[in-house]
Length: 118
Image (cartoon, rainbow, N blue to C red; front, side, top):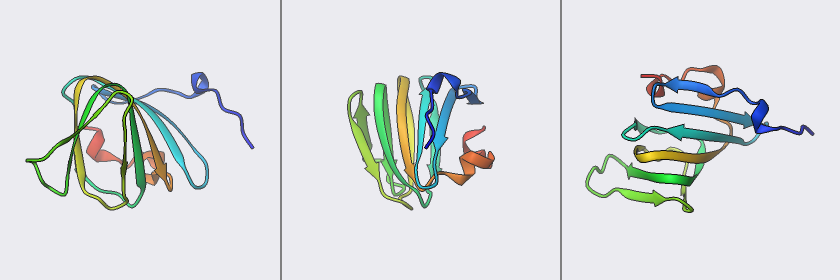
């Protein structure tokens, strides 16, 4: 067992508009993130199931390469995204959100998440 204080977790500046912290165990990862208005997470998919909860701002998602039918997640709302579901997201306003992944995102752990580092 390990007790963790978020204030001791380094904040990673992934790109000029995205900051994150994350912790993970063997089977789950929790990430706290902050985005500037207008940042777009490009189309991607991953094996990991994802739960996204928005604390501030609006997170607009698109799924399955369908650019015509976005889903907006507002502060206080969450969405569950199954593994391997293709998606992208746009930050509307400053967005603070928490993502939970199972299993942990290995590409985030080893820094090979180049699609976010542009």
